Length: 335
Image 1 (cartoon, rainbow, N blue to C red):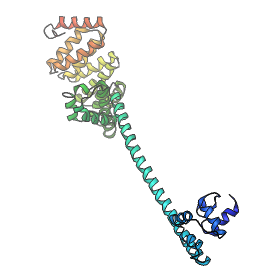
Image 2: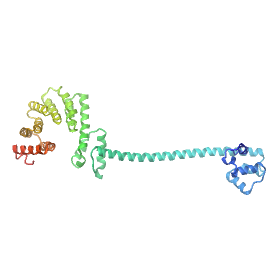
Image 3: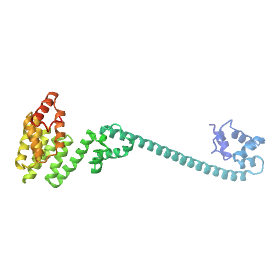
Image 4: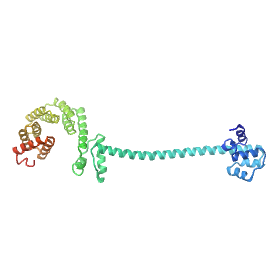
């Protein structure tokens, strides 16, 4: 940009106006006419009035001397600069407002998307298929709580066992028992209460983590002296050994537990399952019969037998059915 053009704009206190120093612009043409004392056209006068260059217009028309023009132009320039600063501040504020609004909108969208992904992740994690709309909120609350490491509370367990049975998946069941096992394990480490360890072992087994359960059961067993608690620890230890297919050890644990508490059905149930899985079907059936005679729930034993049959090969499954029905025809007529 030519320095003379800039100087002309500065002379008339319009160096803050970009067009004043640009050759060919309307304002620059006006300044040239004013500077050469040439009269302004009506259109040029209207242009100055419209743009607020009142001091320049009055000077050009001879209504202001140069000193008064300078003072008035200076005041006009200060107003323009203040107005420019205010406009820039307003624009900056408006831009911040738009940016903040965009960020809020994006945060809502991202949060919504994250929530959708979280729900999908929970559903995949816990093997959930279709969830009825009426149950959706309750199921997602349960899944989120379990994902956070919390056991399912009693009311929700009752609901899952009845109305919400379709949502009580294997994955959710294991995760619940894992969380429960962690709670009991922590209590065992903090208090040294062996019953906390026994309960922890039971839940580790249900969580399909028999190795962790066996470790805790063996730790607790070494501290027990009274027969009832010792029997309970032996039984839960034997259950973990059975889960790990360490059948000889499981049978010894169950036998010791039965010797300590011969009227407790729990060691008998363990021995029934262990003998069945070891292939001694007659002994297994007899131990189950003894467990029922001591108060074991028939339905619970039937569930365990179904589980054993389901895990066996087809040929072994048929052999088990024949052996049970031969030994106790009426009892196992349902097979």
